[in-house]
Image 1 (cartoon, rainbow, N blue to C red):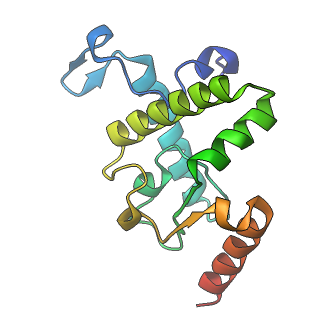
Image 2 (image 1 turned 30 degrees about the vertical axis):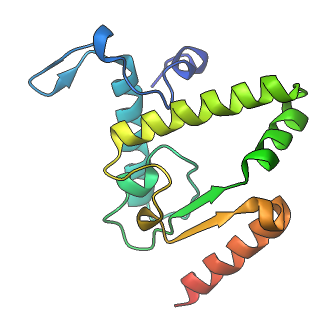
Image 3 (image 1 turned 90 degrees about the vertical axis):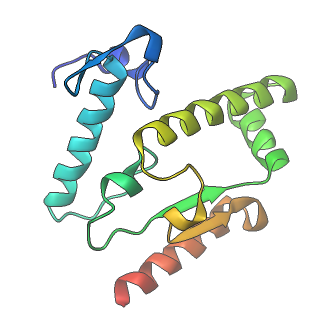
Amino acid sequence: MQVDAEHLKKYEEKKRRLFLSRTVKGHSNAPEDHVANHQFDYIRRLADSGESFVIVGRCAESVLKDREGIIKIFVTGDRNARIKRVMEKFSLSKAKATEKMDRHDRTRKAYHNYYSDTRWGDPEAYDICINSSKLGVEKTAKALLRYIRDRIEE
């Protein structure tokens, strides 16, 4: 799109701010809507290519809901395990890690629930939901890979 990626980052996976935007005859002036719709169009084009790919987030389970071969996965984790992971990954105190995680979850949930026709984390919207705290990240990834391979073989 020949737009600076750093500029777009502040709108990525963000729900539009209703009091700073307006929609007229289905056209929005919100940069968040434009970024989201460009991402959704890109995801659809990628799916049209027939290529296999992985999308993390971005309402892909809704964007591609009518497509054959999509495998929809939701990974969660126990709150304390997630906080510990954020602390380690970003070298943060427990309080700062908790604040960062909660802010990220709120933002992602608001984005998803605004642009998607399903609710964030609703098990009915996914083929499999898994708690990575039970097996750890590596074993969860291996379990998901087995699930994907079994689905592909169907």
